Image 1 (cartoon, rainbow, N blue to C red):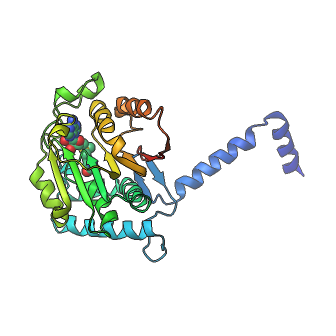
Image 2: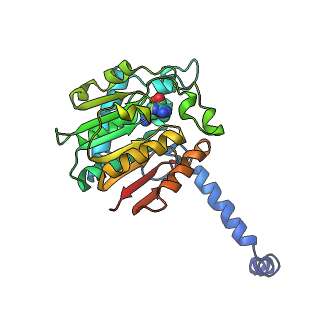
Image 3: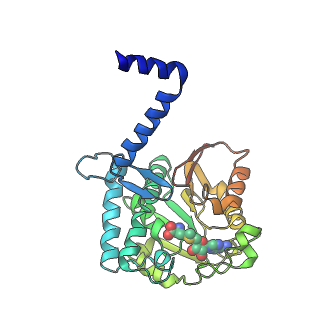
Amino acid sequence: MIKAKIKRFLINNFPNFFKILQIIKNDILFSKKKKKFSGWGLETSLLLPWDDEKIFHNETSKGYIKSKNKLNKKILNKEFFLGQIENYKENLSFEDVLKHFDELTYRHYVVYYSAITAYHNTRSRNIVECGVAHGMAIFFAINAFLKDDSYKVYLYDSWESMRGDELKTEKDLLKKGEYDYLDIDATKKNLNEYFSNIVFNKGYIPDSFKKSKNPDDISWLHIDLNSSYATKKALEFFYEKIEKNGIILFDDYAHDSYEDTRIVIEEFFKDKKINFLQLMTGQVIVTKKE
Ligand SMILES: C[S@@+](CC[C@H](N)C(=O)[O-])C[C@H]1O[C@@H](n2cnc3c(N)ncnc32)[C@H](O)[C@@H]1O
């Protein structure tokens, strides 16, 4: 009786009281739930698409788990060098490197998903990556295309430190000198299993396009250049080659330090018929509709 009276009093005099109580309760419940994944701006306690091989029958999860296990094995056997992570900070232990790599799992799931989707929805078996580093992301895309051994991979990277010529904005210029540790031979070694299907186009985009070996049609394109000018030029060069229902995956869209790239992407697609999906990892999947 008294309890009901207090409740009525609170409702009448403090109408938001129970709402606030509910929010606090939910917050406590969420923080008590076991976090299953955290990385790249994404945090979840829900079932993960790579959680358990036995429960998934969908092709994306099955294929992704298989490629993830394959890459993990290579990393542990020191057959795949995670140069980008190893050079991210000084004095990282191998355990730290593995932990950083794990934080990229959802990002790599998106790479695999976008590639397998493009594989099914296009005829071309050509895939392209602009900004390759040591081949971590392209590994997953290649694995989505392996079923058809006519697949071809076109890789574009300077494999040298980023230089001022292609960094045209104040923010982008802050990246000058990055990636000075890159080594094309390490990338070749990492991807040696797929070597005969890969074309390595070394040089700075866009100049490199003049002398590179380029595909005529493209199923899947990944742009991960950390540079807005190079991103714009890559889009201008490759867009017409992308098949209807082909996919462009952008790595640098929602992260704070890539605001200039985001502007370039928004500007480029203003008048194009596409589907556009922004993800919580900061990536964007664009599907070409005509
Ligand atoms: C973030 S890394 C790529 C990471 C890779 N996609 C992965 O997931 O493992 C960015 C890459 O872009 C390359 N890059 C940046 N600007 C470039 C340009 N103008 N031409 C060619 N490569 C460039 C860098 O050398 C670097 O390897």
